Structures are given as structure tokens and as C-alpha cells.
Length: 216
Picture (cartoon, rainbow, N blue to C red):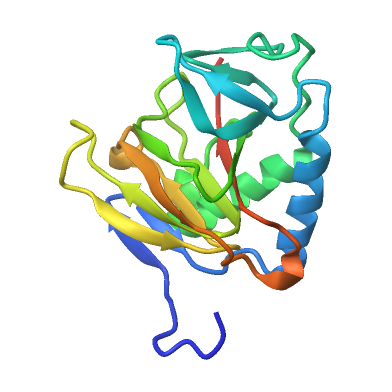
């Protein structure tokens, strides 16, 4: 945002949970957006996720490396078109490692490469309920990259979906990393601010790229 009255700075929201504003510059955001658009195309492209209870998630999702479905992983889009999941490119795995190292220090960087990417697209009405990223066998830090519209990211505790939690404003280019004691903290997206994406990015809505290590 231009003419920031109080420039945003990195902050530790909870133990080993760090928000870094403007981590991706404009060129980095455009590169990641172009890649996301390619990954979203069929086969194994962007789809609506249906929950076991018969509901649907309001954000839409595409996966790389491993295909996530409630509540497990597969090598094919088992709840979509059944096609093999697209590979996670080395440059994206390296981006995840560099981001985790920058946020939490060299010791926190995972020994195994990032091999899962969950890419969620949010339109103005989409939300994400409080949940934990607990379907992996690795405790490596989760890396979350934001593109497009600003959102409220709610980061909670490891015990329940209820308070205490902290609301963080995530803008395009921001990164949020959580590991260690906060690796299984509940988190969600209660609000997206439509029309707040950088105009030069050419994106209507919000993309969130979440990188994980499977441990499989």
C-alpha cells in the first residue's frame, strides 16, 4: 500500500509463527501467479472440494506433488477428474525452504524438500474455517504465500478452534510461516477484502499457496 503511515514489519504472532510483509516483490508475485494459472488448468486442475458431510468449501483448490482430499493424500485427483497430480517444481520447493529459513532460521529449515503445494483460490465470498494442517507425517514448517486480494488470516491455538487467536492482515506478497510449537495451530480465513489486489498484478480474488513436507 502506498504512503504507509506505519510501515509494516515482520512479527512473531505465536512461538515459531512469523508474518513477513512484502516477502515477494512484484516480479516474484507475477511469476508465481503465471505458474498458478497454468497449474489450475485441467487435467487435475482447479476443483471444488467436497467434505465428507456433503458440504463444499467456498474456496477452490488445486494441488501439486500430492493431491489433498478430506482427509488424506493421493497421487491422483481422487475427488476430481482422477488424473495424476501435477509435479511440484524444484524452484517452488526451494522457495519454500528459503522462506522457512528466512522466517524461522536455518535450524528450522526442513531436511526433506517441500513436496506438497495446496493452492486455494478465494473470490470475494470465499472463506476458510478454522482447521489444522495435520494430514502430513512431517512436522516441518508450513509456508503460506499470498497473492491478490488482502484477507484476514486468523491464527489460533493448538487446543481448539476457539480463542485465543490473533487476526493478521495478509496482503499480496506477504508470507506466513508456522512450525515448531505452532505447527498444529488452528487457523482460517474469515474475510477477504474484494478489490484490494495490486492493479498491476491482474488478479481478481486471492490466491494462497501453502507449501508442506509430506513425510510420506
